[in-house]
Image 1 (cartoon, rainbow, N blue to C red):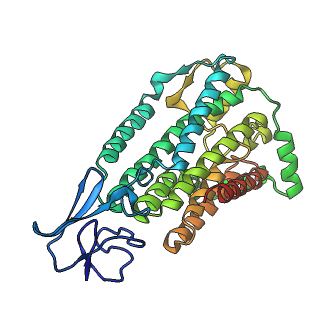
Image 2: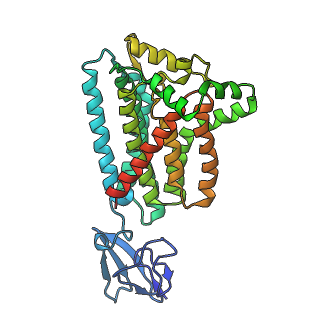
Image 3: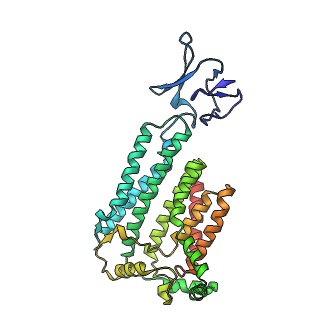
Amino acid sequence: MQRCPLCAGEIEDAAMKCRHCESDLTGTMTLQPAGLPTTARHDAGIACASQSSTEAAVPVPVFAMPRGRAVTAADLGWNPIAQTLVVGQLALVAAVALCLRWTPLPMAWTTASVQLATIGGLSALWMVLYQTPGRSRRDWVIAESIAALILLVSGSLILGAGQYVVALWHRPLVDSSLAAADAALGVSVPALVAWMRPHSWLTAGARLAYFSLLPQFILALVGTGVVLRDRTRLWEFLFHFHVCALVTLICSGLFPAACAFTYYGVESLLDQTRFINHFSALRAGTLRVLDFSNIEGLISFPSFHVAGALMVTWAFRGYRAWVWPLVVLNAALIAATVLLGAHYAIDLFATVGVFAGSVAVHRRTIR
């Protein structure tokens, strides 16, 4: 028997992972005999396995250990992906601010107090955990998941403002082209809505699935980060969230659509009053201020709802107990976007292409 150099717990001689602190024990390290009274301590970046006062301590440099043995900034959420996303968010903020110089839409920042306070509070908590990280992955994973949550909240805030800004580009509506594409596919949104309307139980289920997206985003962070402790999947999810958000945001500005229910003149099975009011006011130039407490999703083509469903399900691939319920739920969510009259069918195919592109970029750039 030997002792782990980090937590001093007893482990097998051939162990590759400590069963007490879950530290990776592969590679070069100094193990202490299990029979000796060993205490692990950290002093100025050095982990020492101390025996008795008459025996010399054997120093083990913390930051010289292979990744996973001792805490690093990356273990706590400040990794290359997080750094890239922070830079991307700052660039998007600068772009939105630049666009606002030529638009008559002032932002009421006081209405964003809840979101900003949330980001500030989470950031303060992360800094505390960053300064006092603990000694095992059980401790580090909380800080890393909080860092991911900060990026999710701040990214959502920027996306919410950005969609109003790009709507002010006043590009021609593409609804006629989207409707023509649906016709070519043999899909009629008005017919599907008419079929759904008398089936109240089916409509209620479709609505629940449609509105499950935001809770699913939190599930993705907690599930991959805290429960499964799969750091790769956690940051892959954040990567896809930002890439898909950026692409759908730009596309909604270049190819704006008033949505199927407006074009066809049918009543959606979702309450679209706020969308109609905000979108029409933006197009007419009568929306005078952006109220962050009254933000509405304006992205139609491609569908960020569909992208969100795909990225959450993709994050849990290989985990059967998680992925199959999500497959069922998100299949219902994707179908609901058309069955409830919120999107054209062609929006779904375009979104699959966007997400597939994000996966391809991730595989080529993230090693």
